[in-house]
Length: 326
Image 1 (cartoon, rainbow, N blue to C red):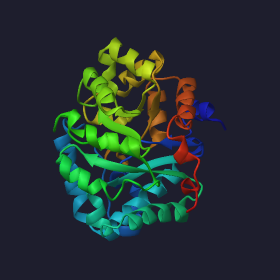
Image 2: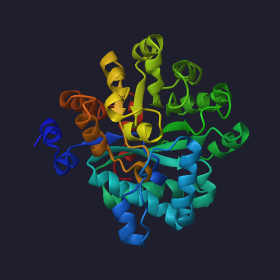
Image 3: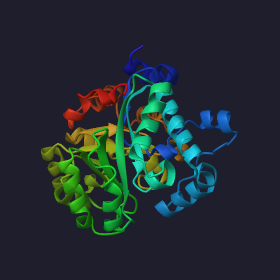
Image 4: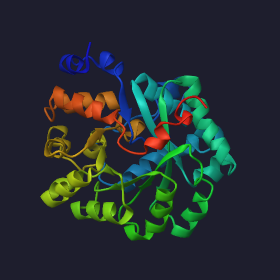
């Protein structure tokens, strides 16, 4: 059964068999709920109602994740659970990684240990999956602290991208220019979470100032034709997480999600999971929800899926053996 037929029939098991990408996945919250319960007895309940802020989401994480997974052993287990979830969901390209602070906290400040844990889990669970390692940065951290942490990461070609996330208003975006200049020198795909809570002009500013290749979320671009024209002209990819946007109160409902407007405007978009354990939304469910809500047609969603499997940047990384078995 092909993707379009499976969507139209609502056949989730067939949809899971069809290749797709997930390039906006926070692995600490991206694992298989069933796998975690079977292996540890920990039963993590998904959200049952929309949240109103990132602060509420952080509180949920502290309650349901923090008490159980804040050790090196359990951090490794979360990596395993996320790759397990992705494999069961038919994800053939998975982009996940560790926040820079996690290197010392969970991997003895040994970058080789961190890399080997991620690749080791991939080889045990899904050896044919293309794993792209990401370097995560929190906007809340002082720049000097981030620069010191990044000394361990830069220079290691196993890393595909760098991503800035957290409160979009924590500090001015231009503070991160030196970091992103260094990331460019290291050949990393440059990403940042922007336009989830901020404005269309915030998206344009972030792309211009940090020379971003891709934007995580970016849904506020629909506020401005000028911003959409800019993203289209610059061929900036938006890695969108629809259920997350709805459950965080950024979008009223799935049928009205901005992804349809952005896609039909000609902007490069992908569909992704974000935080599976919170939003109960793997990539297959995202596609199905978008179709069943009437937001996008099956044909449009299939083109978006295929687009997500097309590499538009960082080709040097993708052509090296490290994306296969190490």
